[in-house]
Length: 384
Length: 116
Image 1 (cartoon, each protein chain N blue to C red):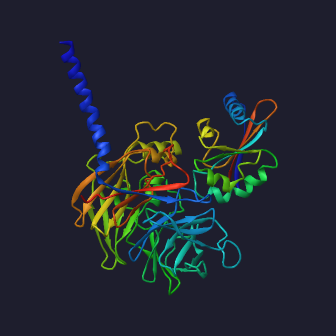
Image 2: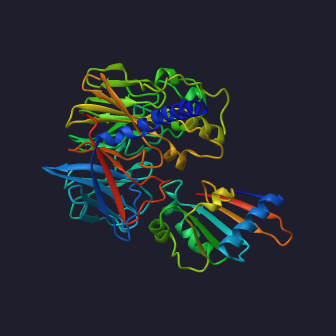
Image 3: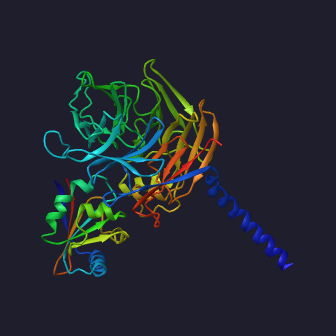
């Protein structure tokens, strides 16, 4: 009798843990390959500012190296550094202040951005030669203050035709509810021929955000640019994606909801302190990056899962402790699957799409086994 | 430069600083803590400040990445201490912004958060 009870208990424990274990390991069913990028003594494995680039049949992972002041091009095929493009940091052609991101548009146009400003940023070519310093004028009919350009992996600045498409972080008090309104333009375009910056009035804070107080991290969206007119926005707190057709001035909401969480969120009633903000963003689910996979015609939406313990934790670095899932949608935004990835393993910030699938970096802050002389990439095919 | 200073007599902070002094084996009473893994700009903005600080005290660099830390300050310098395990944050001494502590003879602590 005792034996049977024990078997029942053991079976029960097994079935509980099996459910969790199975979910945690299903992602490996989609594993395609591992690529190791070889890093020299002057290259940190963080790759904070990085970008995927395809040149014919060759694929590259490109990174801004703040130690060597260079743009480093790594071949995804064999992991070697195929080119280090040094840029000047002094003199009239140099970039001598804090850098914040880059855009590798082509061999002739590599943009290196200054922190918080397009003005003063430079363009170089693949030989490292200075091409141009950006000195745009801003649309004088609008009065929105300084243009605080930001380019991140989740919302990269992109060159389409002659225009740089980019976002800005607001410089006003984000905990003043009246600032979270429908007027402030979050997206801009820089016409390189006219040297002029134009505001995009279609991309402002979403309706459910307005006149409320949110953690500052929830005011940062991810954008995937499909064409010079169409783009898709993922807001951290919205179950739906915003689909925007700029030329025709059409905005649509498309449901792209996690199967594990609901989008109901409660704003703060008074401005929070940093501890309260961290607790809210780490303790609840959040949508992050939106990506389009042109090879498989799929959309991916990243979802960060809550931490159980948030005491004394801060958004950075503890976001790396969170599990995340990738919601997979077909080209008509129909749900296909949602795959959970483990905590403490991959970077939740740098996710790219290559020919073989979704590329994740194994440089998680909490992974004690990371080798600083190599950046390991794991590629997953989420189509099958 | 934005900064503020306050006199603190909390036994708690003094004992945590002493604990850290013991761990990194320094007798310096003026300590600067810089977390290089917080804001990506820190590695550029505070480099000159940290180099100058070495003339008067010790610098504790918090980072998971030794190459980044070594590019920021020479880790072989006798007054540079590399805190890869983030002990400084566990002891609540390192903040998002660089922080200077002065341990006074009467065991009180002066602290200064530095921001440019």
